[in-house]
Image 1: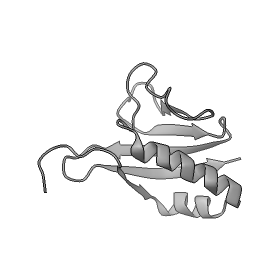
Image 2: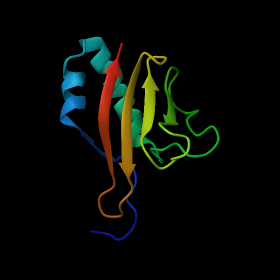
Image 3: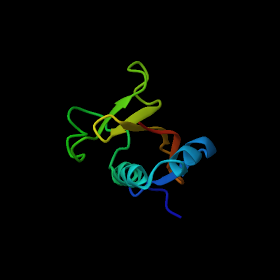
Image 4: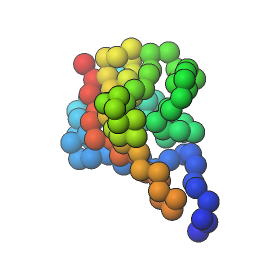
Length: 107
């Protein structure tokens, strides 16, 4: 165990509701969700803080906070040009940083 802050890839957990929603999607949509999750867990900063920090995301993906007044709160990762999204929050603990995805939607 190290006392240094751990970096990507981040651990990502799904709430039961989000995992059930993901499991109920068609295979093509699940592939898009998996790609979005992969971008999220490999990002240097899962909150994409700063100007144009999400510019390296693939076309059709973007990130924004759920509430602009809570930049360290829940965020939304949009994928498939806004047809789908993952709502998540990040806990930047030193020993076990973690992303929790609590909503998975594709329409």
